[in-house]
Length: 191
Image (cartoon, rainbow, N blue to C red):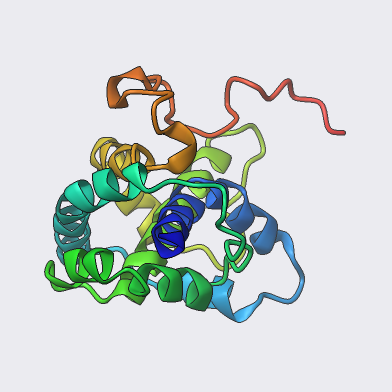
């Protein structure tokens, strides 16, 4: 079923590919509406509880989607909030899993983008001369730092359902040092 691949793409695109998209978007002079929405989203304990439950609920759905992985998913180019939410909503089981946790699908997508954006920002401010990116809330960065281990565990649960990882990696094969994207690969020199 082609839509199953779309959900897998949507979840993975949000959870993985956006590791760098928010950082690029934050550097733009004119901030696009999606970035503005992610910037204004406030990470809270209640939101984290709903997100954690939604991620748990998605577990069996991700296993099902992984079984339906194919190479016919050509509609995964729209990484906008609307596009990602629409693709997830297009799979009734995925939408039901998220919404049964009390979180609308769009908020689930925004939460993930905010989590990733604030994870990147948390890393940036620890670098020599690193400053909080424009539009990013220090309160959200602090929330991310306080919940970093749980947020990473939840992100790995979603990532484990990735079609590209199907059959290639077991959940326990993910490295423990995924704290900060690119940290081990940055040599301090600019391109």
